[in-house]
Image 1 (cartoon, one colour):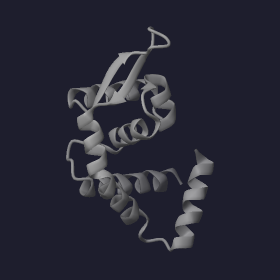
Image 2 (cartoon, rainbow, N blue to C red):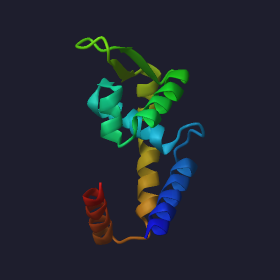
Image 3 (cartoon, rainbow, N blue to C red):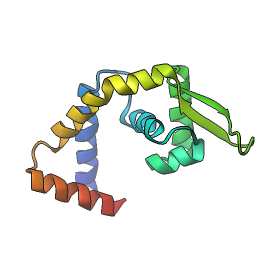
Length: 129
């Protein structure tokens, strides 16, 4: 079973990389960008929880996105010990530009399944998370 889950993940990631339209953007980075677009500014810990990333992965993703000027970090206004992360204007523009490509990657990933199978599959996946 684990082999199949890993293989399905590899397939989904490969499709994403083929379709997204930004060779530097990984699926994990995309998850962070879309989450920030949806939720607004978040602490690093919140971003990690929303995207199911461990703290080390979250920090690495944020650093790479900061280097590309897609997100920025600031001291959290409620707690100066925490860092708040938010999209920059270029980050907002990139997400808006690539949303259709991300949907195409989603559709291509699920293409082998009927509409009913897709709904069942996504429901079962949410139960595993």
